[in-house]
Image 1 (spheres, rainbow, N blue to C red):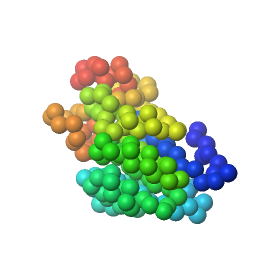
Image 2 (cartoon, rainbow, N blue to C red):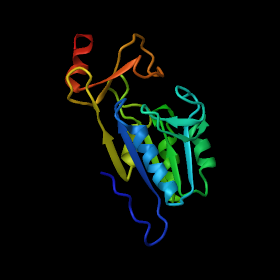
Image 3 (cartoon, rainbow, N blue to C red):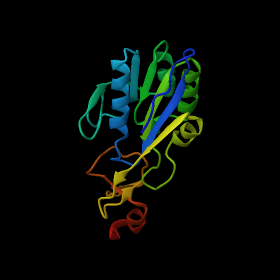
Image 4 (cartoon, rainbow, N blue to C red):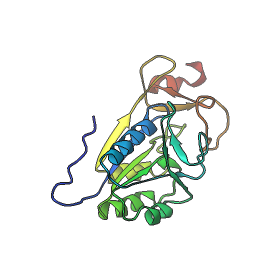
Length: 191
Protein backbone atom coordinates (compact mmCIF):
# COMPACT_ATOMS: atom_id res chain seq x y z
CA UNK A 1 0.00 0.00 0.00
CA UNK A 2 1.34 3.42 -0.96
CA UNK A 3 1.50 6.00 1.84
CA UNK A 4 1.69 9.63 0.76
CA UNK A 5 4.71 11.46 2.18
CA UNK A 6 4.18 14.44 4.46
CA UNK A 7 4.75 17.98 3.25
CA UNK A 8 5.75 19.07 6.76
CA UNK A 9 8.79 21.27 6.80
CA UNK A 10 8.19 22.93 3.44
CA UNK A 11 7.09 21.97 0.00
CA UNK A 12 9.26 19.21 -1.43
CA UNK A 13 8.63 17.47 -4.68
CA UNK A 14 9.11 13.83 -5.54
CA UNK A 15 8.50 11.28 -8.29
CA UNK A 16 6.16 8.31 -7.95
CA UNK A 17 6.13 5.63 -10.66
CA UNK A 18 3.28 3.15 -11.05
CA UNK A 19 4.33 0.36 -13.42
CA UNK A 20 3.40 -3.15 -14.49
CA UNK A 21 1.94 -5.13 -17.36
CA UNK A 22 -1.22 -4.34 -19.27
CA UNK A 23 -4.43 -4.88 -17.28
CA UNK A 24 -2.62 -4.54 -13.93
CA UNK A 25 -4.52 -1.40 -12.84
CA UNK A 26 -1.85 1.26 -13.44
CA UNK A 27 -4.23 3.89 -14.81
CA UNK A 28 -6.83 3.09 -12.18
CA UNK A 29 -4.23 3.66 -9.43
CA UNK A 30 -3.05 6.88 -11.10
CA UNK A 31 -6.64 8.18 -11.24
CA UNK A 32 -7.19 7.21 -7.58
CA UNK A 33 -4.13 9.16 -6.44
CA UNK A 34 -5.02 12.19 -8.56
CA UNK A 35 -8.61 12.27 -7.26
CA UNK A 36 -7.29 12.12 -3.68
CA UNK A 37 -5.01 15.07 -4.43
CA UNK A 38 -8.01 17.02 -5.72
CA UNK A 39 -10.00 16.14 -2.59
CA UNK A 40 -7.09 17.61 -0.60
CA UNK A 41 -7.59 20.86 -2.59
CA UNK A 42 -4.23 20.54 -4.32
CA UNK A 43 -3.86 21.96 -7.82
CA UNK A 44 -3.47 19.11 -10.29
CA UNK A 45 -2.48 18.96 -13.96
CA UNK A 46 -2.80 15.67 -15.82
CA UNK A 47 -1.15 14.71 -19.10
CA UNK A 48 -1.28 11.88 -21.58
CA UNK A 49 0.38 11.29 -24.97
CA UNK A 50 -1.62 12.88 -27.80
CA UNK A 51 -1.34 9.60 -29.74
CA UNK A 52 -3.42 7.73 -27.11
CA UNK A 53 -7.01 8.12 -28.30
CA UNK A 54 -8.20 4.56 -27.55
CA UNK A 55 -10.98 5.49 -25.12
CA UNK A 56 -11.20 9.27 -25.28
CA UNK A 57 -9.35 12.21 -26.83
CA UNK A 58 -8.95 14.16 -23.59
CA UNK A 59 -9.68 11.86 -20.67
CA UNK A 60 -7.44 9.26 -19.12
CA UNK A 61 -9.65 6.19 -18.95
CA UNK A 62 -8.90 2.93 -17.14
CA UNK A 63 -10.04 -0.49 -18.38
CA UNK A 64 -12.79 -0.42 -15.74
CA UNK A 65 -13.92 2.94 -17.20
CA UNK A 66 -12.78 5.24 -14.37
CA UNK A 67 -11.87 8.54 -15.98
CA UNK A 68 -10.30 11.91 -15.32
CA UNK A 69 -9.78 14.90 -17.62
CA UNK A 70 -6.25 15.32 -18.99
CA UNK A 71 -4.31 17.40 -21.47
CA UNK A 72 -2.97 15.48 -24.50
CA UNK A 73 0.61 16.51 -25.33
CA UNK A 74 3.06 15.67 -28.11
CA UNK A 75 6.27 15.82 -26.04
CA UNK A 76 7.53 15.81 -22.48
CA UNK A 77 8.71 19.42 -22.83
CA UNK A 78 5.07 20.48 -23.06
CA UNK A 79 4.51 18.89 -19.65
CA UNK A 80 7.33 20.99 -18.23
CA UNK A 81 5.75 24.17 -19.63
CA UNK A 82 2.14 23.37 -18.72
CA UNK A 83 2.92 21.85 -15.32
CA UNK A 84 4.35 25.00 -13.76
CA UNK A 85 2.92 26.32 -10.52
CA UNK A 86 0.80 23.30 -9.57
CA UNK A 87 1.01 20.94 -6.63
CA UNK A 88 0.67 17.64 -8.50
CA UNK A 89 1.41 16.52 -12.07
CA UNK A 90 -0.02 13.21 -13.30
CA UNK A 91 1.25 11.45 -16.42
CA UNK A 92 -0.33 8.37 -17.99
CA UNK A 93 1.09 5.98 -20.61
CA UNK A 94 4.59 7.28 -19.90
CA UNK A 95 6.18 4.58 -22.08
CA UNK A 96 4.99 6.48 -25.16
CA UNK A 97 6.86 9.68 -24.29
CA UNK A 98 10.32 10.71 -25.45
CA UNK A 99 13.58 10.06 -23.62
CA UNK A 100 13.47 13.51 -21.97
CA UNK A 101 10.52 12.57 -19.73
CA UNK A 102 12.71 11.47 -16.77
CA UNK A 103 14.55 14.81 -16.84
CA UNK A 104 11.26 16.71 -17.10
CA UNK A 105 9.91 14.82 -14.08
CA UNK A 106 13.13 15.51 -12.18
CA UNK A 107 12.87 19.25 -12.93
CA UNK A 108 9.24 19.35 -11.79
CA UNK A 109 10.11 17.49 -8.57
CA UNK A 110 12.95 19.94 -7.89
CA UNK A 111 10.37 22.75 -8.16
CA UNK A 112 8.41 21.15 -5.30
CA UNK A 113 5.84 19.33 -7.45
CA UNK A 114 4.61 15.82 -6.70
CA UNK A 115 4.92 13.92 -9.99
CA UNK A 116 2.90 10.71 -10.43
CA UNK A 117 3.73 8.67 -13.54
CA UNK A 118 2.06 5.49 -14.80
CA UNK A 119 3.28 3.24 -17.60
CA UNK A 120 4.24 -0.16 -18.89
CA UNK A 121 7.64 -1.26 -17.64
CA UNK A 122 8.07 -3.81 -20.48
CA UNK A 123 6.93 -3.97 -24.09
CA UNK A 124 5.34 -7.06 -25.66
CA UNK A 125 8.82 -8.47 -26.30
CA UNK A 126 9.56 -8.46 -22.56
CA UNK A 127 12.11 -5.63 -22.91
CA UNK A 128 12.26 -2.38 -20.89
CA UNK A 129 9.89 0.12 -22.50
CA UNK A 130 10.73 3.71 -23.47
CA UNK A 131 11.69 6.11 -20.68
CA UNK A 132 10.30 3.89 -17.90
CA UNK A 133 13.68 2.35 -16.84
CA UNK A 134 15.19 5.83 -16.39
CA UNK A 135 12.07 6.97 -14.52
CA UNK A 136 12.37 3.99 -12.19
CA UNK A 137 15.97 4.97 -11.47
CA UNK A 138 14.93 8.55 -10.60
CA UNK A 139 11.75 7.65 -8.68
CA UNK A 140 11.38 8.26 -4.97
CA UNK A 141 8.49 5.78 -4.77
CA UNK A 142 7.75 2.80 -7.03
CA UNK A 143 4.57 0.74 -7.15
CA UNK A 144 4.72 -2.39 -9.32
CA UNK A 145 1.26 -3.75 -10.04
CA UNK A 146 0.40 -7.19 -11.39
CA UNK A 147 -2.42 -8.53 -13.51
CA UNK A 148 -3.70 -12.11 -13.46
CA UNK A 149 -2.46 -14.53 -16.14
CA UNK A 150 -5.40 -15.40 -18.39
CA UNK A 151 -3.86 -18.83 -19.09
CA UNK A 152 -3.08 -20.19 -15.60
CA UNK A 153 -4.33 -17.68 -13.02
CA UNK A 154 -0.91 -16.84 -11.55
CA UNK A 155 0.49 -13.34 -11.17
CA UNK A 156 1.00 -11.78 -14.63
CA UNK A 157 4.06 -9.63 -15.28
CA UNK A 158 4.08 -9.65 -19.09
CA UNK A 159 1.90 -8.20 -21.84
CA UNK A 160 1.50 -10.90 -24.50
CA UNK A 161 0.58 -9.64 -27.97
CA UNK A 162 -2.00 -11.89 -29.61
CA UNK A 163 -1.85 -10.21 -33.02
CA UNK A 164 1.05 -10.38 -35.46
CA UNK A 165 3.32 -7.51 -36.32
CA UNK A 166 6.70 -6.32 -35.17
CA UNK A 167 6.06 -2.63 -34.45
CA UNK A 168 6.64 -1.86 -30.78
CA UNK A 169 3.69 0.52 -30.47
CA UNK A 170 0.32 -1.00 -31.29
CA UNK A 171 -2.47 0.73 -29.41
CA UNK A 172 -5.10 -1.67 -28.32
CA UNK A 173 -6.52 -3.60 -25.44
CA UNK A 174 -8.02 -7.05 -25.07
CA UNK A 175 -8.25 -7.54 -28.83
CA UNK A 176 -4.43 -7.28 -29.17
CA UNK A 177 -2.98 -8.10 -25.75
CA UNK A 178 -3.47 -10.33 -22.74
CA UNK A 179 -1.67 -10.50 -19.39
CA UNK A 180 0.51 -13.56 -18.81
CA UNK A 181 2.83 -14.91 -16.14
CA UNK A 182 6.49 -15.42 -16.98
CA UNK A 183 5.96 -19.12 -17.79
CA UNK A 184 2.88 -18.74 -20.03
CA UNK A 185 4.49 -15.75 -21.77
CA UNK A 186 7.55 -17.89 -22.61
CA UNK A 187 5.31 -20.63 -24.04
CA UNK A 188 3.80 -18.16 -26.54
CA UNK A 189 0.85 -19.47 -28.57
CA UNK A 190 1.30 -22.91 -27.03
CA UNK A 191 0.16 -21.70 -23.60
